Length: 166
Image 1 (cartoon, rainbow, N blue to C red):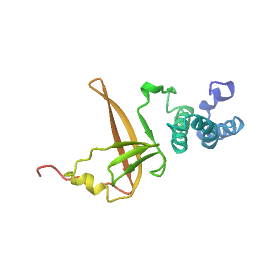
Image 2: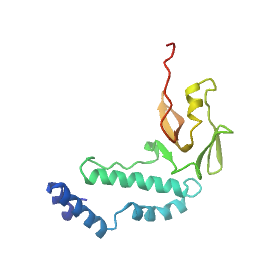
Image 3: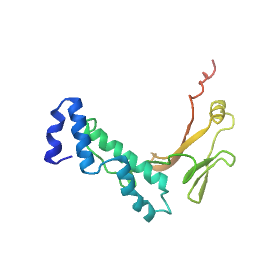
Protein backbone atom coordinates (compact mmCIF):
# COMPACT_ATOMS: atom_id res chain seq x y z
CA UNK A 1 0.00 0.00 0.00
CA UNK A 2 2.97 2.29 0.48
CA UNK A 3 4.20 1.65 -3.09
CA UNK A 4 3.99 4.31 -5.79
CA UNK A 5 1.30 2.28 -7.59
CA UNK A 6 -1.08 2.67 -4.65
CA UNK A 7 -0.29 6.32 -3.78
CA UNK A 8 -2.44 8.19 -6.33
CA UNK A 9 -5.45 5.89 -6.25
CA UNK A 10 -7.16 7.59 -3.29
CA UNK A 11 -7.60 10.77 -5.38
CA UNK A 12 -9.59 8.99 -8.12
CA UNK A 13 -13.39 8.71 -8.24
CA UNK A 14 -14.94 5.68 -6.49
CA UNK A 15 -15.46 3.49 -9.59
CA UNK A 16 -11.96 4.09 -10.95
CA UNK A 17 -10.50 3.66 -7.47
CA UNK A 18 -12.22 0.30 -7.02
CA UNK A 19 -11.09 -0.84 -10.48
CA UNK A 20 -7.43 0.09 -9.83
CA UNK A 21 -7.43 -1.58 -6.40
CA UNK A 22 -8.84 -4.78 -7.93
CA UNK A 23 -6.12 -4.75 -10.59
CA UNK A 24 -3.34 -4.26 -8.03
CA UNK A 25 -4.81 -6.83 -5.63
CA UNK A 26 -4.87 -9.33 -8.49
CA UNK A 27 -1.30 -8.42 -9.52
CA UNK A 28 0.07 -8.86 -5.99
CA UNK A 29 -2.20 -11.85 -5.12
CA UNK A 30 -4.02 -10.02 -2.33
CA UNK A 31 -7.34 -11.68 -1.56
CA UNK A 32 -9.10 -13.42 1.28
CA UNK A 33 -8.41 -16.76 -0.40
CA UNK A 34 -4.68 -16.03 -0.86
CA UNK A 35 -4.36 -14.92 2.76
CA UNK A 36 -6.03 -18.15 3.90
CA UNK A 37 -3.50 -20.11 1.82
CA UNK A 38 -0.68 -18.09 3.41
CA UNK A 39 -1.94 -18.77 6.95
CA UNK A 40 -2.49 -22.52 6.46
CA UNK A 41 1.17 -23.58 7.07
CA UNK A 42 1.25 -21.36 10.17
CA UNK A 43 -1.81 -23.04 11.64
CA UNK A 44 -0.14 -26.42 11.02
CA UNK A 45 2.85 -25.26 13.05
CA UNK A 46 0.59 -24.23 15.97
CA UNK A 47 -2.09 -26.91 15.53
CA UNK A 48 -2.05 -27.76 19.24
CA UNK A 49 -3.41 -24.26 19.98
CA UNK A 50 -5.01 -22.98 16.77
CA UNK A 51 -7.40 -24.98 14.62
CA UNK A 52 -7.64 -24.49 10.86
CA UNK A 53 -10.95 -22.62 11.08
CA UNK A 54 -9.57 -20.31 13.76
CA UNK A 55 -6.58 -19.60 11.52
CA UNK A 56 -8.94 -18.79 8.65
CA UNK A 57 -10.96 -16.52 10.91
CA UNK A 58 -7.81 -14.65 11.99
CA UNK A 59 -6.78 -14.31 8.32
CA UNK A 60 -10.21 -12.89 7.47
CA UNK A 61 -9.92 -10.37 10.32
CA UNK A 62 -6.53 -9.30 8.95
CA UNK A 63 -7.95 -9.01 5.42
CA UNK A 64 -10.89 -6.92 6.66
CA UNK A 65 -8.39 -4.56 8.31
CA UNK A 66 -6.44 -4.33 5.06
CA UNK A 67 -9.66 -3.46 3.21
CA UNK A 68 -10.47 -0.69 5.71
CA UNK A 69 -6.95 0.70 5.42
CA UNK A 70 -7.00 0.51 1.63
CA UNK A 71 -10.21 2.54 1.34
CA UNK A 72 -9.17 5.09 3.98
CA UNK A 73 -11.53 3.89 6.73
CA UNK A 74 -8.54 3.09 8.97
CA UNK A 75 -5.45 5.23 9.39
CA UNK A 76 -3.11 2.54 10.62
CA UNK A 77 -2.83 -1.24 10.78
CA UNK A 78 -2.15 -2.48 14.30
CA UNK A 79 -0.38 -5.78 14.81
CA UNK A 80 -1.52 -7.67 17.88
CA UNK A 81 1.02 -9.43 20.00
CA UNK A 82 0.21 -12.10 22.57
CA UNK A 83 -0.54 -9.61 25.36
CA UNK A 84 -2.86 -7.44 23.25
CA UNK A 85 -4.89 -10.20 21.61
CA UNK A 86 -8.30 -10.10 23.28
CA UNK A 87 -10.60 -12.44 21.35
CA UNK A 88 -10.58 -15.66 19.35
CA UNK A 89 -13.38 -17.45 17.56
CA UNK A 90 -14.07 -20.16 15.03
CA UNK A 91 -16.19 -19.96 11.91
CA UNK A 92 -18.73 -22.31 13.47
CA UNK A 93 -19.39 -24.46 16.51
CA UNK A 94 -18.10 -27.61 14.81
CA UNK A 95 -14.34 -27.82 15.48
CA UNK A 96 -11.74 -26.14 17.68
CA UNK A 97 -13.40 -23.69 20.08
CA UNK A 98 -16.85 -25.17 20.78
CA UNK A 99 -19.62 -24.65 23.30
CA UNK A 100 -21.50 -27.67 24.67
CA UNK A 101 -24.90 -26.76 26.10
CA UNK A 102 -25.41 -30.15 27.78
CA UNK A 103 -22.19 -29.91 29.82
CA UNK A 104 -22.24 -26.09 30.02
CA UNK A 105 -18.60 -25.91 28.98
CA UNK A 106 -16.38 -24.84 26.14
CA UNK A 107 -13.86 -27.16 24.58
CA UNK A 108 -10.78 -25.88 22.82
CA UNK A 109 -8.66 -28.59 21.20
CA UNK A 110 -8.93 -30.95 24.18
CA UNK A 111 -9.09 -28.34 26.97
CA UNK A 112 -12.50 -28.25 28.69
CA UNK A 113 -13.54 -25.16 30.64
CA UNK A 114 -16.77 -24.91 32.64
CA UNK A 115 -18.95 -21.89 31.83
CA UNK A 116 -21.05 -20.21 34.51
CA UNK A 117 -24.58 -19.39 33.31
CA UNK A 118 -27.28 -18.16 35.70
CA UNK A 119 -30.11 -20.70 35.75
CA UNK A 120 -32.70 -18.12 36.83
CA UNK A 121 -31.97 -15.74 33.91
CA UNK A 122 -34.98 -16.24 31.61
CA UNK A 123 -33.47 -14.10 28.84
CA UNK A 124 -30.36 -16.30 28.62
CA UNK A 125 -32.48 -19.46 28.73
CA UNK A 126 -34.66 -18.17 25.86
CA UNK A 127 -31.53 -17.47 23.79
CA UNK A 128 -30.56 -21.13 24.00
CA UNK A 129 -33.76 -22.09 22.15
CA UNK A 130 -32.15 -20.80 18.92
CA UNK A 131 -29.42 -22.58 16.98
CA UNK A 132 -25.91 -21.80 18.22
CA UNK A 133 -23.71 -20.41 15.41
CA UNK A 134 -20.35 -19.91 17.11
CA UNK A 135 -18.73 -18.82 20.35
CA UNK A 136 -15.96 -16.33 20.98
CA UNK A 137 -13.53 -16.35 23.88
CA UNK A 138 -12.88 -12.83 25.21
CA UNK A 139 -10.15 -11.68 27.57
CA UNK A 140 -10.76 -8.58 29.69
CA UNK A 141 -8.50 -7.03 32.30
CA UNK A 142 -10.52 -6.28 35.47
CA UNK A 143 -8.71 -4.77 38.46
CA UNK A 144 -5.38 -5.86 37.01
CA UNK A 145 -6.44 -9.49 36.57
CA UNK A 146 -7.31 -11.35 33.38
CA UNK A 147 -10.96 -12.42 33.21
CA UNK A 148 -12.25 -14.63 30.41
CA UNK A 149 -15.77 -14.56 29.00
CA UNK A 150 -17.59 -16.65 26.44
CA UNK A 151 -19.66 -14.69 23.95
CA UNK A 152 -22.17 -16.90 22.15
CA UNK A 153 -23.82 -15.96 18.85
CA UNK A 154 -27.17 -17.53 18.00
CA UNK A 155 -29.10 -17.71 14.75
CA UNK A 156 -32.03 -15.35 14.17
CA UNK A 157 -33.10 -12.25 16.04
CA UNK A 158 -32.51 -12.02 19.78
CA UNK A 159 -35.50 -12.35 22.11
CA UNK A 160 -36.94 -9.19 23.66
CA UNK A 161 -35.61 -8.19 27.05
CA UNK A 162 -38.14 -7.58 29.82
CA UNK A 163 -37.81 -4.62 32.18
CA UNK A 164 -36.75 -5.50 35.70
CA UNK A 165 -39.45 -4.62 38.25
CA UNK A 166 -41.82 -3.32 35.55
